[in-house]
Image 1 (cartoon, each protein chain N blue to C red):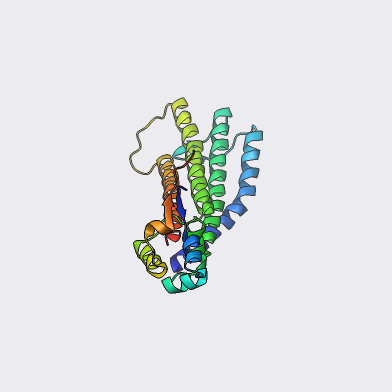
Image 2: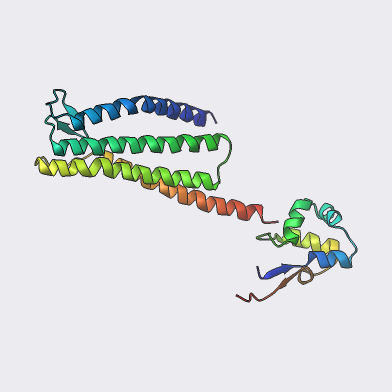
Length: 167
Length: 70
């Protein structure tokens, strides 16, 4: 189980880093949403550069921050899931629930990040076809994969129970 | 479930105790209890054969089908 321990260590590290960045992010986004002064530092988000702060860009920033928070929340469930795996609790209702929750959160995060940016691109007339890495598709695919895993674990749990009750 | 397990009846007829049967068929008493209470989902032919051999009976003597009223 070395791989599991390594993964748990990485997820724990990312989780701690995320916990540190959340207050900073909330403060920064809060400041940007409230202030009407021009902001000199350009912000790049999902391939879109935001230089002018108006209501639209503020909304896009807000949704991007919400997407990040959703990812952090899914990280929390991933941490719990890995802890269960370490305790050798595998075919359990909690594992099924966590996988499903992670999947839903990934999909929500994908939409929260992807849809506002897409709308923003339409508004600023910068529609382009992106071939290659697309965070929206990655997040939705990962979310669906996690939900499929949840279903697979549900079937595995039933099979395990049947096996245990076969005398 | 519509399959009723009558191991208890056969045990009484043969004047045998549960733990003795469990020991002779190589099953734990906990598993035999699962079988007796009808919680088991399935039974292997080998287990059925062992029970029948020890209790000197037919499979129909230890289980019966009862139509579900629902």
